[in-house]
Image (tube, rainbow over all chains, first blue to last red; front, side):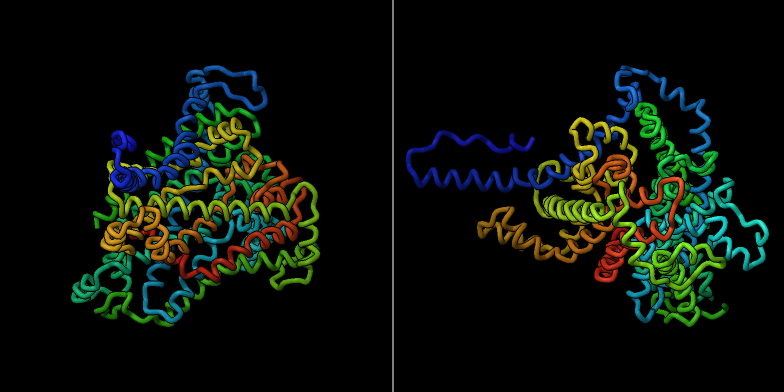
Length: 327
Length: 283
């Protein structure tokens, strides 16, 4: 595409200086017209091979038999892998878990982020210190923090149950957080919330600081207190960023993998609890693909998840806009 | 709460309530990290106690030695591997993304706008969903189980190109580029002597964000490096925690060691990381 821009130079003229001039001209043209493509090529080539190609090739794999444990079993499977999805109880269970954890982790996450952003949006002493402080969870490796929370939610000596006992709950029979769907979901959602609230707070803070000051001055005439100021002026004004974070956490939340994986007492199994109470789709994909060795089916599941994410992210963006517009 | 506020919140001084609430936020952010250290320094007996221990013990070196000498976990090697992967990915992201960002911001070429649009589109592609095919691709290249498999997909990032383009657009005056051209400077010459010096702050921001994200990556490294002798530290941590009987003081001693480098980065480059995240929103 790019090389066609450079015309082949005509046969070299006899005089040396002219040929040098031609070469210089050629070089200049090459430098201004073709070199830009060389600068952007590494991105497109590398992203194409390792980012885009796998996503597309996934479609091919999902239509084939592809087994790690039985390499001879190959060939087209047609829609077999997809048909299997519909009757796969594990898939529907994982879908249910994924959505449950997603809601428990997204709603508090974004609400608390708004409140913290509003706190940070003041004239503060040690301004940078507070901003860096809310990022502690963000830089903590999710594997490390999840393993810590796995201990926090232990039945016998866990700190969560100790806190509960302080308020007089479960002193006799400590809660087994891993036993039920609701409790394991809360535990996992807690980890996700802890990690991402500060990050989202900074996104909101950045948008809040870009709100023109006269917007507030105009509203002060109507006598808006700090609370009304937050919900009736600040939040509607940063709506684009709210939508952005909603879409971002939809994409991330529906692919949740690390927390449910390491919450397992034996992560290597990827089972998401004794009865798959908290197994998410991303976790199920890993289990189907690399524990059961059925890559074709895992690819089909990835595609299903991809479509689900597209639909949910779209709905959420619309919903957020509608809610904001209704104010 | 009926106080009239004539000023924008950002012009209002924080009250004691603001500081008190922020103090609570700080406590909730930092406490898990402190408690990680407590567990990493305790004995099994101390950890079996109820209510839970809240004061660090003196067993850190003992626990650490166990982590480093455990067979089939390769913890020491995993730290080195993580450093290699994160360093190579960061260096490559900075180089390639600043090159592309420079081209998109300051050079004129056919198809510039459509191509930039493609970059922005790819920002939203959740490439985690391609892991099955990525695994097959790496299998064909015979890279599975080697660090190459983890490094290659991270070499460039759409966000990096986008971020660099935005920054270079502001930080490098177009006249300066034109003037150097007239003086006979080549495109690469302009990149080295004008663009690179001007974008140092952006390089710091993108570099820190990339390093942190790469260090913390878990899913793909687990798939391609799990069960090999070349885990990254996150994979080694999950190996530490796997098995029928988990020894928490050991697991969290490992977790603490794998967290410290990032805490140091936050300490040194916190300002830049904050800035990077906040600029990501403005776009």
